[in-house]
Image (tube, rainbow, N blue to C red):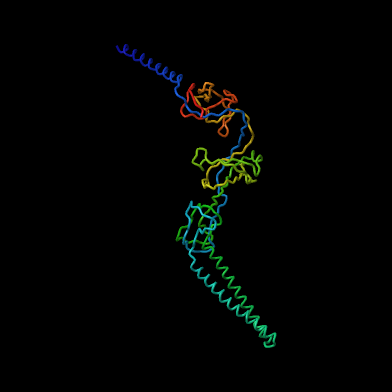
Length: 361
């Protein structure tokens, strides 16, 4: 009884399987509607092969700001990550004592200037009297000495003012270049000691890519050689930031452990999207390869097979199985399955099937 029931069930399942397969084949063989596609024409063309070197982003200029005087931090005007312009005041230290000394120096200059002017006028008067025989030589010499003393005191007061002004500069630390605050060591109210770092700043308009090159390849490079720099994390796009630059410097001394040389590439960073420490790749052209190249996005895989869709003379999608070679710069070299001049689909509005009617847009 049990065996008699199982046989019909198996027959039903088998029939359903073949019906489903025949339905799928019918759908594939009878596509309906036109699918909009974009195409390119396969052509024989050269493509550069590139050597890639890993590196990291470093600031082109980095400075740790400190002060020459001891004082309380009154204000740090910029926080970490904030940008500033050249000449902006970054740090203010309490400077009431220096302000007082500056005022004293200015007052000393005023007093010394009045005394100097008075001695200068007296000297002219004595010189005139001496010329008329109304003043003795001793009186003239005494006045000349008094004038020289007044002149020296005036110069001394002015020098004292310059010294105070110079020291006072260290209570107002000014940005030497436009950039960004990368690190803040002291807070408002902290005591700053001479030489103690308060802020670390970086130039953000440009960055330096430092890449490692093996000793076997460094001899092929030279300063000024064009390169491409790719920084995946510097952009929200899938391919990251890619920019053309050139080798600015080749460090002539290798790392004794890795036997690799550092090369420096300077990159503009006007949009501020590149940050220190990001991973970068430096690409350098080596040679040119000629072949039948098409965009890699046109190729799809089914198991171990690679294929593309061409366009038949009847305006229908035509499945073409191909063999590919090297991949470079989002292009792939087709070794077989296509000919120069063949039209290849690179984008479609929906999934294509062999024989699907298409409309090239």
